[in-house]
Length: 328
Image (cartoon, rainbow, N blue to C red; front, side, top):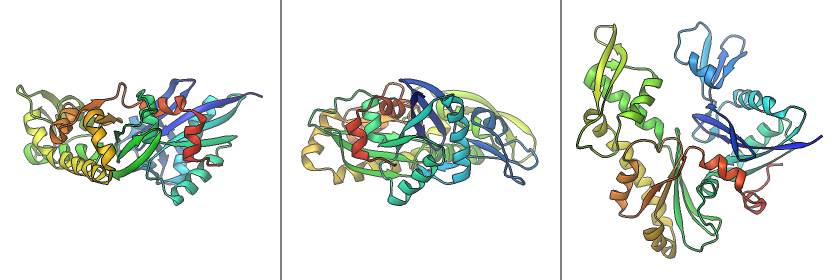
């Protein structure tokens, strides 16, 4: 019986599985379940269709948050659903992307979770290293480069040199904070509440990290909190963008904290090599420009930033996984 290698990137908002360098699963890391019986109703895209719907006894939730497993049973059900589709008659070996801030308790949790799924073996690699590999950074060079992985629930920040994470840090300022600030300004300026899906559309289409000469606009549907009726509003980036200043500045401070811990020799390298941005929340317009203006060093967004980690996981050499350690 042949074995099959699967690369797993399980984030707060999305789950991505990669086999032989191809992404075969890219869906929300969402689980819908019956509150009374605990039975799983759906996962991924099908669970997203139920999110926010007033269905009696049905709740949709993200079982992974801030890079950690929050709901063990639901996370197990989510992974089991997709791995069962991939397994066929073959045994599965897994390589998993994990946060750089993984604690001993987190390692035990991941070990128990993955062993319960019947995997024949499993290794993990820390996200910043996987991202650098996926973005085809030449890790053999002695110079340092900073990787900033902006997800939904957290941002992973690390300075790497010669296949090693030299210094790292994590902040909970991430994509969800941008969404919350947009929701707050909609309530304050327009007396309006909208769905999480609409917030994501606004964040990607209208929100900008730097002001635009010609503001972008978008029509959205929502709920008028004063009249209690459905409504339609035209939302401008000129209103949304100022509301993002707090999370943007918090993100910049977290990056600066990691810079302050970086050895002087590698800090000098950042002037030339700069910052590599990746993660699903880097799609906000002007984010790279904001950080470039703030730190006065080069900033580039990785090609396909949301897939860098899982692609790097599939490309990494055995020695790079050994540095992270085997789970079992």
